[in-house]
Length: 287
Image (cartoon, rainbow, N blue to C red; front, side):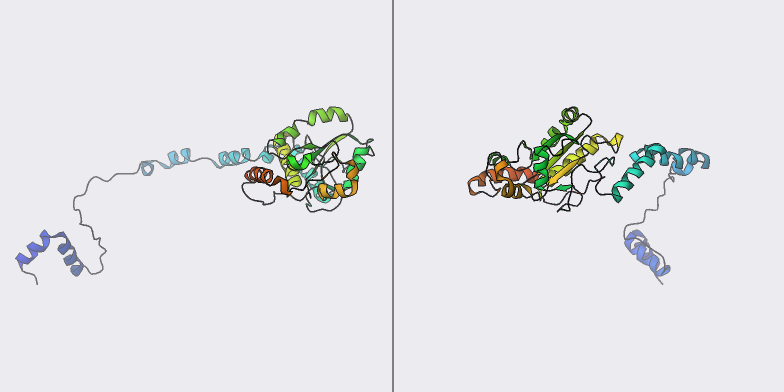
């Protein structure tokens, strides 16, 4: 039993007092910090003082949340008739890979399986047939896009092809749709992309044009300014091997040509910045 003098000394020392309380109540929980015996007025949370009716009034209704979510989904905003039309178009394109981008009709050119199954691939002979007028009864306007670097393009390209390899060229291509529509009249207008092997740069440009076209016409789905896009299978290398006499000029400058190492570094750095620094393949944009 503690003497009164010892008890007074313990009471004067908060830590000793806490230890003494532990002996008196061995299962009590305590803190290492000194116990403040002074109790101020209890602060009540404003929310806790609200009546049930007030809380219910302030809480968002489920219908309000549903409407907010619905507004964030463009498909949900469409009338039911429009939703049915979209479902029908997507369903037909899933079943028939030969349909053009807006699902309205089949491709005007014969296609073949290629390195990029989400894109429509055509042979270099088909490109020659288009240039020579074999498909003039159905195609009224053609844009051929060479996606190689300028020094490659200058060394030889497909007849009448334009050079487009930069990100800003996507918009330049889209800007030509009205001119091409006017020239085509009731016939179709098509775009053909290629690069050296049609493995990376040509397909990438094709996908980016399609994506930009979808974004531009997102409120008019499935309408597209350019519904019919193609990639020339195996690229300019294969075209040059079989149709050298048609090339303008009649030559072939590879991307890795030793005389253009500086140009390659320059254009490749810009290409990597467009891709976010990687060569990851872009997602399929068929729909």
